[in-house]
Image (cartoon, rainbow, N blue to C red; front, side, top):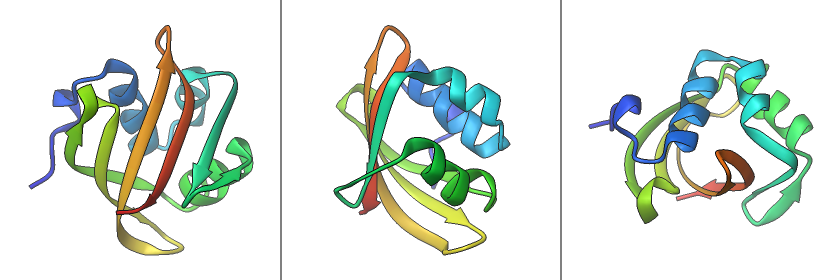
Length: 107
């Protein structure tokens, strides 16, 4: 059963999931610290290119199934129009309410 987004522990991660699920690029971008980085299955990716392709232009949506590490680690049933649904793990590093790095990959 999914964890309701409004019950996620970390407010920055909660805002990240909310922005992804709403397809709100402006809200998403506002959460990223200057120079924020990300990786997908251990490979560094360009944040803007990857999120455009994997989230915003493909209808990405996160259904959180669990959280740990004070809300900075999620297991998610992630779906988009390109890949369908897959179980993924997400980890976040934050600083002053901004995301400095996130990584995702198969869970």
